[in-house]
Length: 235
Image (cartoon, rainbow, N blue to C red):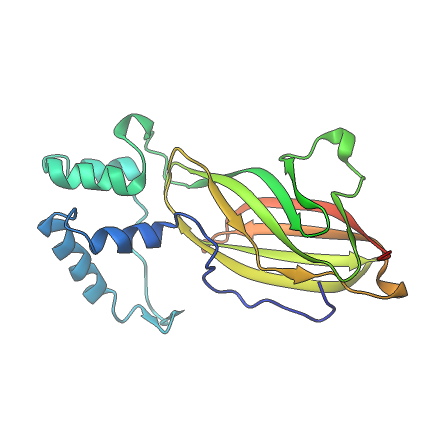
């Protein structure tokens, strides 16, 4: 986390199983019923003025939020369309409870580095570990944070993170990034944040505090994790 370095928000190439990717892959195959493909194309045409190069156009009002159960039941008389939606969303009707608000449940946070390999810590962090460094790295080490999480109830759109780091109470680094849009599924998602490098030098060594926060595009906060880590001299 070199001082002054900031990662701009944007789609990540490390996301596994993002909803947008699933949608695109299935549109490219013959599994999509003609009625579904036509409906998707109509929606894209209608929403053509909603964004300009990824930036929302002023005055655009999104449609009402529907639960996944409502979305599936809306076309329940069309078996092929209903089955396609269930397959796309990675769930079946028995998993749906009609809840509108999506929920992102984080299972673990990990650190990946050539120095220490991969270390994963279950979330929430055990009280016995509170106040202790989550990980220790040597100066000048390249590393990545890895998250494991599940999405429940509904599609979460525009899930993004911010990570702020302090040393001695002074902010020294902040990074932001976009994870993407995810649909509920039984298997958890794995996401690795962008690679970073720990600073070097006498002043860089010591203990740091940090806050990692995840929000969606409706400003819902799904997790706020406060943690600490240590940077040691490279021997």
